[in-house]
Amino acid sequence: MTTFPIERDDQRTILAASILIIIVPVMAASLRLLSRRIAKRTLDISDYLMVTAVVSSIVG
Image (cartoon, rainbow, N blue to C red; front, side, top):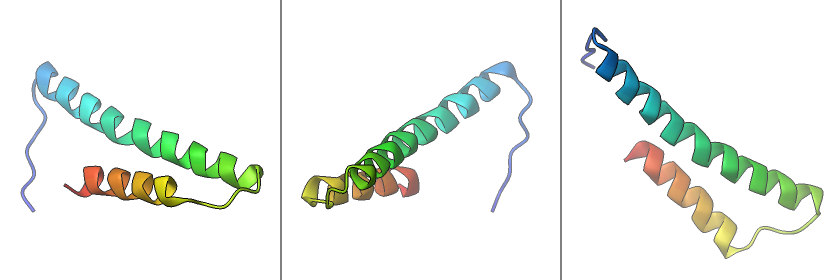
């Protein structure tokens, strides 16, 4: 795996935005799944599709 040094402010900005774009959907999906568990509701197809979308957005 190749690593690149972060030397400029615009590189830091892009890195911060990328991290934020990963964290926000993961937190939203986690909170939704947690709320379904607290409400004692079963997961349905939309929940599975949401998890699939979050995972594929992180991997891809």
